[in-house]
Length: 547
Image 1 (cartoon, rainbow, N blue to C red):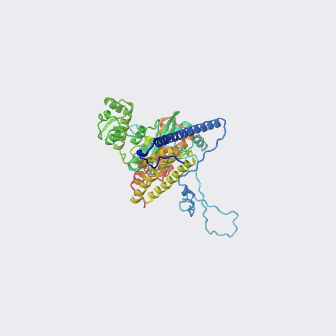
Image 2 (tube, helix red, strand yellow):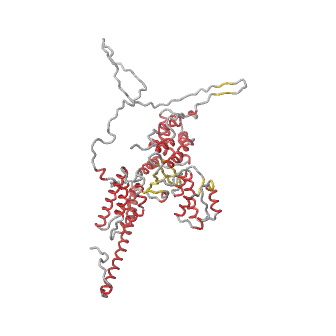
Image 3 (tube, rainbow, N blue to C red):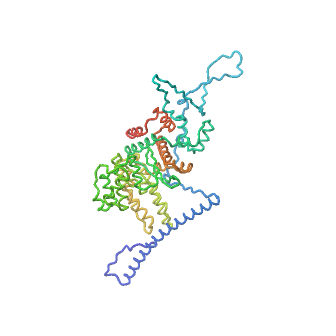
């Protein structure tokens, strides 16, 4: 039996003192029950946090005692029906392909039969192809011709520019490929090269990996700029990154055409806007900056002091701080908001589209421009709920099943978007998440969160090619996490920049269908066999997708 508000209203003229007393008592009891339900929900959340903390302490104790802990493997409910359904035909990628079509003969060896009988006549050759690679040291000694002119001047032959330095382009490419593509630590690369017969030291390998990489840094910066200029949406996420023994963060920005990594000491919104601004140093307060400050509710006394146009206010952080001081904007919150607005204005003036959709997991620093939310992360608000009664657990499961059914409807819409289907999905969203459940405070709170973020969850209706989740961003960051587990943190600023740059270039090559190995060789030999990556991104972005 559930206690609800009385469905029948009794006129005051017909109420006796006893009826009034009972009605007041019922109303008070209903308020007490609602308060108790809220208290129970909060206590359950506290209990869950404590259980998680106890589990963590237990794991630490087992680790100290060198005991193995039980692995936590949770089945995913995402697209469960699709995964369980059996498809006819062969598994994707299992079809046989002909190796003869791409086989290039580098060497031919004739093998004669043994014990050839007398009188045998030659018929033909049978082809038997073997693939092999050659791994060996190859030292080159350049003899630079030297001439003396009649005036006594010495003229010496110049080395090819790809051989400037005592290590050739293939060796340098191989070292970078092993470290960034194959994730081989520097000490193992040293051992590997020495076993090949290369005379090299640990310091020289470190210099090959991090020094004189300005051209790569510049290309990666252009990858970000062109990627942002041509993108309709980007995905973004961050993870931990240690540098010089201190905890920092690595932020990834990308989509299906590019990836850019940036390691910093902060993951604030100001830091994110600095990444979006790219290599530019100017600060601009334009109309978009004004809208941002009004949205963030900057005090009117500060807002009235600012002038909004397309001109660069100043170059560099020091000049901008002096600019704020001249306007008597000295409060911490005021400096923070105006700085963010000026960075946003600068990014837009340098090519960032104000209509760019930013897909994230809901972290507040990413909620700028046109923000879109990941459905998988939003579903976790339901997964964290622990129902007290069987009815509450049944309601949570029912909402989850309905959510994933709606999620599959959105995926179908992405394949064939229509105006009618869009209107139906908008109405369906209100039907699902506009429901309220009596005496289930936590579930109602979760449903309110879905309704509050409806615009961010339904961005896909405006841009059907927008992903419904941030799996691509997490996949990009997994590369960085794996590298962090293998090699730990970085010690030198050049090393941190090199890790970010080559991780981004490798990911970008992979997304564009280019060989990272051929890319490295092309850049070190200057043969341009692999085109400039920003040009490839621009060309792919402007090419219409096949229907």
